[in-house]
Length: 225
Image (cartoon, rainbow, N blue to C red; front, side):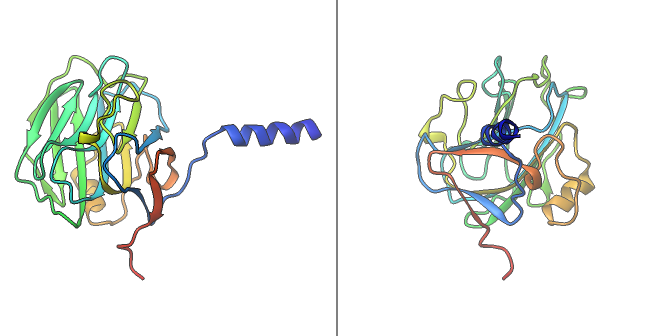
């Protein structure tokens, strides 16, 4: 019995546990190449389609990484990035496309969803309820089985290669990812904070993560008192 107890203690101590982050945010408080959060997916790839949704609160006017997925073959396998305020750049297996004129508000929460499917090549961005045009971004590859998913930094190598000039400063919350293109009604429900189907790859209500180098998990100050 004593050996079993010791084994259970060791097992719990060495295993990441999923956590319900409802009402919480990740705070990235300073410009640095160090703060980041590693997210562990609930489902293994490969994926031939994907949707990611998140909420961002920042006043960054320069380069900002919102969501970074790298694979052993592509450092920008699935990257959501802002080269300047008001412009969103998406990368799929190192191919890029810029979206302009979407309602990106400083000092306010911005709800963002991005979809892609390999079969049609179509990708689309939604920001605060407004959608972009659907554009083609063909990729010869699907998203590989082995994924490194990081928020707060942009990966130039698998799991690393961070540059402080591309870091995120501010707060991120409600991060979800699916292995499919979420339909428009579900996306609008996410935008309006209505009930929606949680991500089956990443789920904010059951998130396995590791914060690093000064990232803080705090209460969302925008919630009702």
